[in-house]
Image (cartoon, rainbow, N blue to C red; front, side, top):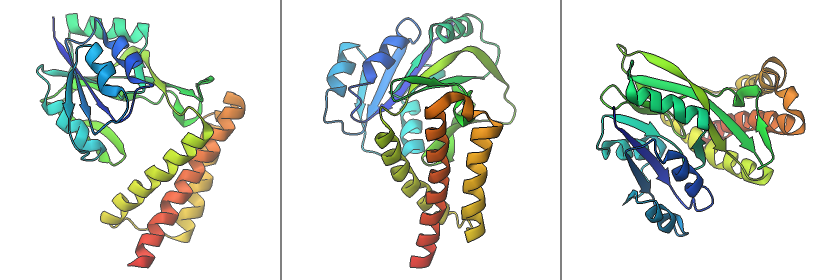
Amino acid sequence: MQKLSAVIITFNEEKNIARCLQSLQGVADEIIVVDSGSTDKTEEICQSFNVRFIRQEWLGYIEQKNYAMSLAKYLYILSLDADEALSDELKKSILAVKENKTVDGYKFNRLNNYCGEKWIRHGSWYPDTKLRLWNKKKGRWSGINPHDCVKMENDTQVKHLKGDLLHYSYSSISEHIAQANKHTDIMAQEYYMKAKSVSILTVICKSIWKFFRDYFIKLGILDGYYGLVICLITAFTTFIKYVKLRQLYQKK
């Protein structure tokens, strides 16, 4: 049977981490938590699950996850965020992979819970497919902070597994807006470092298109009130990201 190393990065995740670790029981052969300075009960909770708890100063989303991966004992990595958990069906799929590995990477759908009240099944939030199980010699974290993703080598095959990765996202609309503000700071800086161009037309068109695509084409409208809220905040996030990027250029 192929053994798995589960890796998680944390910072003040006492409200989420127990659920995440509990879902990994019987699936992961080792669990590594890399923490960037939590001041709550994150470490205490982790130790009750007998994990390897490593303290590491924050390096950035991509860099922190690659560091966590480098600590893994086993060849195959299962990466979760602290606010995620494996559904029962996804557990069965991963256990089947451990018994009969066929490819180097596995992806699955992520199902997002919003405000602790509604599972979002449309728009850009579902199926929200993620590659989170892979051969560490064939893939690593990449992308543009804070939107990290696993990039596999060109000669690898990836298979889709049944079951959802459950994501307990924002506990309130205020938290969603605050996180959007934080992430747009990071994205604008990343785009600025890469000299990404931006114009007034870009700011307007991309924001409008984002809302239209998610709410109408991807059927966010079917998620009711929260579907509307999510699509509006997502479009506003796009708007703010490019406005902040323009401001960086203007300051220069």
